[in-house]
Length: 194
Image 1: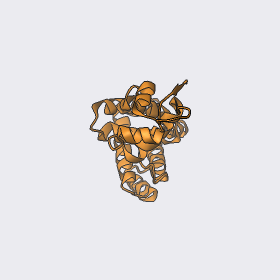
Image 2 (image 1 turned 45 degrees about the vertical axis):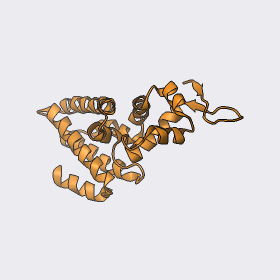
Image 3 (image 1 turned 90 degrees about the vertical axis):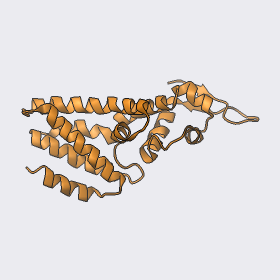
């Protein structure tokens, strides 16, 4: 991606550069830790070290910055675990159990970035554009899970995928309240019995 020169500070010196990938990485961390709605444009610009015009030149809008952050998030360990667990699951019950146990682990792992950025934004943001952007990622995970459940012989693959996402949403919310990985995994053991 190209660097965009910005006029971040008045006075002498070179203007700062805003790199799209670096900006998306910073925004991903901030949106994940504080929530999309809680991060104002001014605070984002401060964190990126640029003024608003530079943010808008590179990302178009705050929602455009979120889209770039979600693209990065989709390839991160926070989201990639679903495919990893699907690959090692041999039955529908294994798939449900493995994905949920791993979600509890991942969502509680970093106390500064708890839960799932995509799920929290898709279901918790007041901004319809942000919800729509996050729902693209959620819908992709839902489709992936439904295909995998179908391949494993689930009677209702769509319902199974929806059940996993519903449980993942609950785990994400619980992680954001500080619930421990162990407590969430014990609940999953009670819910999904082998």
